[in-house]
Length: 168
Length: 448
Image 1 (cartoon, helix red, strand yellow):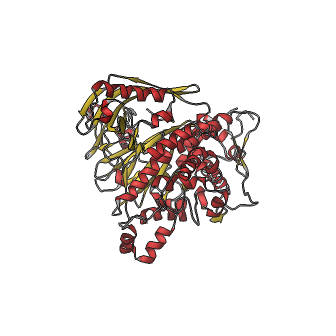
Image 2 (cartoon, chains in turn cyan, orange):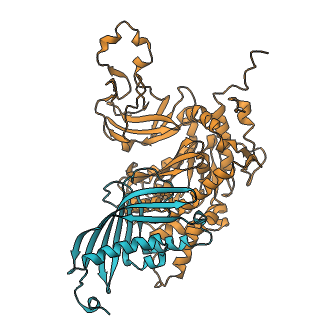
Image 3 (tube, one colour):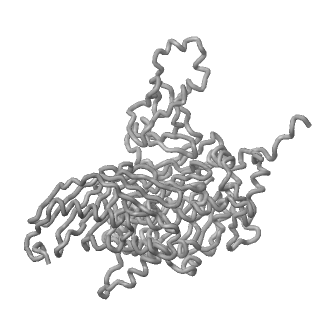
């Protein structure tokens, strides 16, 4: 047990936050989705807006706005025997710029990290690239950093896309 | 050999129980579809809430035909070809905006009233005595053949002459009516940006899929089936309410009998809908306060009648589908024989609770986004079909389920919900509007 687990106040460093974002991206790239699900707070939401600077996730269409049930469904579907759009499976790669730590509040146990990255996804002969900004709202919960919201803004969110099957 | 542009050649490709694969894979047939079918039919353009103020415009296309929908100074919606009569430059480039009292071409500053009429040309003396007034250019921006605003929904017929709006849609408009009537104010408004999803397949595959009730439990087993499995395996206290996401996705796994019993209705000119008696949208939770608002607006009997309709997918031939119970419209915009842009729009029921539009937005992103698991299931099948149809071993695509001899598509019919009659109805209409402006057979060679 580390000190942070027993302390009443979190003591998260900038480096830990940056490492967390890199580790999350690597889990997705390596297809370690079950492990990836453990990074989330129970109330965590993955949001990918449809409109540039979209403010309302609920009353307008988003590309993706999913709670833990839906993310679990997504992960189980990717591994399903009759998931025909994943025969063969897609692969992805996140190439991260240095994350900006916008908020460290160890009193409240809240943190915000903004990361620009390029996202590449491929399947069969097709490959596409997205330029995205990921905003991680993290919380210190039960001795670990958890994702309360991951917002992914795609630079060309208003373009017509084919299938985006994995998670930017 | 190039397919001849005549009725005989078209009719040879549409048989009662099967259609030729060229309908999906031939670039030549796609050109003919844009020239004939999409010109003779009434095609959806947009909703008038997208252009609420005078001078507001919205750009779109029918096939490769660039169009502008604009609200003119008399408050009427006009639909014009998006092309300067001078050199051809597209007049409006952005998807939506306000042009004020007139359009101004960005190339040479020719300007046009918002009904298309030529307003002014800079340095006009250069045309004096040249007979400009005798040319097409002097007429301004060309309007489409006909426009109809039906309860806010704008449709256009490109051809100057042809079937009237009322004759084209007939009783099929009852689905649009039901969607609009679900607003206590009798009015809908577009909400947010549409999903734009590129499909590398022919547009007709998408339209057929809308009334294909034998695919959900197969193609969507990976998403809906997995959802049901996870939900059932979860430890839930007794009486845990089903979350909205489960209400939306679980019915996709309904058994064949459910879809057989829900029924299909077909109307003349290729229109039709699934969900005559019930549908996958029947069992959504009531939104508090909504029914009371409806009763106040319509009276109890009429309110119950409106909300008692739970039509599933209504196809308006050639290329849109609406879902009345959840206020969604999907536009299958054909770009090429093997490329279709699918736009999925949602609407707010004016004066109804916000929870309704929240469910609608959830449905849209869960089922129809490029990031949606259900969307992935479907697109995979279309793209496999587009590639598979290249096979020379067989020329035909089968549409025979529950086929009956001497089906009469000029009459409304209600049938078993798993029939492919609506697909046959669409091909009947395809042939009708494709050949309406074609000669019977190729003219004889001059040499004979």
